[in-house]
Image (cartoon, rainbow, N blue to C red; front, side):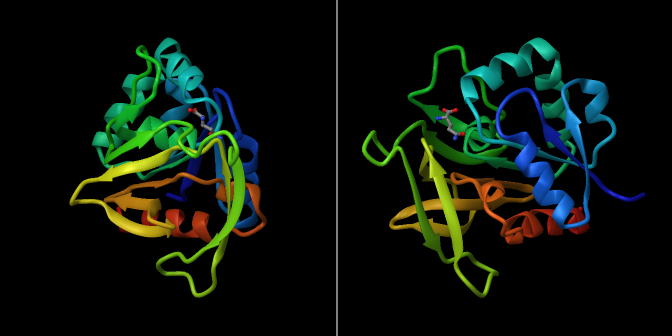
Length: 193
Ligand code: GLN
């Protein structure tokens, strides 16, 4: 069966992810309901507002459906707010915000401070020959990485791209550049499962 990558489309920057996947020749499907989820083999969780997405995940019935697919090994890639949703611990979150705990990291929301709310920088990424231009927008910071987590890139001392099994997270927005190499790293996981 050919792979269809779902993009969580409750809120946020899901269209840009679909465009990156299209550039790679990969079919994508917007996921808003549990029945949409049944049609996909992997899922991207975009940037946006994690508190809003957390609320919509609960009301749409998607939280439980995604949780059981992740536990069954579905590859999933969370960027920025999507990373917050996948983290084990969320600091400076709203008290009613929930996360999947799919990767053993703790993140702090909006951690890079007001002056540098948004910034761009070139980072070295494990497995890529040339640097990747990373766009950070009110980015969460990974403040703890568990022993099972593989670090794929750092900005200064902070881990900004990481993986645990078939779960990958980025604190920046690879979908906002023309460069599809990070999406390729993720879709490469589809061959592994
Ligand atoms: N600060 C946002 C949140 O907490 C994430 C920002 C983003 O996804 N660009 O959800």
